[in-house]
Image (cartoon, rainbow, N blue to C red; front, side):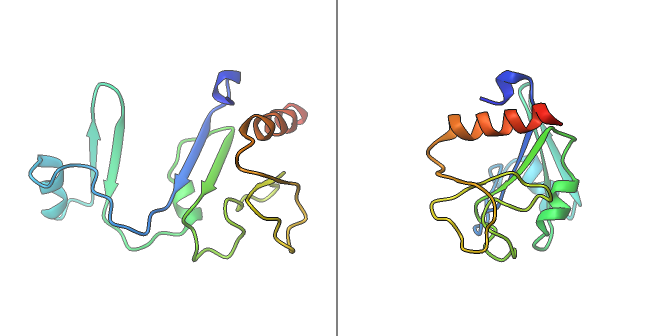
Amino acid sequence: MLATLGLTINVVKHSHQDVEQEPPHKDSARFRRASAQEVLLATPYRYAVMREHPAALLADLRARLSPANLTLGVEGYTDTPMPRGLDLPGAIALACDVSPPYCMLPVWPPDQPEQIALLITRQLQQC
């Protein structure tokens, strides 16, 4: 929804499982096993950078992303001291199933993406 308005959006999703991006027999997987620090896998449609690392902080991962109008940290950051999905200074709202007692922000149910997108676009227009 927001991209149709010309906004660029980044998302950081954390998984507690080991997610393999390529089959073990492919060159990119073999390069990583052979101690390549990073492997950039490019196709005609997209690219992905795989880097072996200890658990990285959300702020460090966000710093690796390209600049965007909006960067979201969503799901899976159970070890990060923040309400799920909220880590940005100057945040304007929280999309969550429950309203945390310590949260002073408006809380929107996650199943209302149109309303959340409208709130975000209104806020960005004021900037």
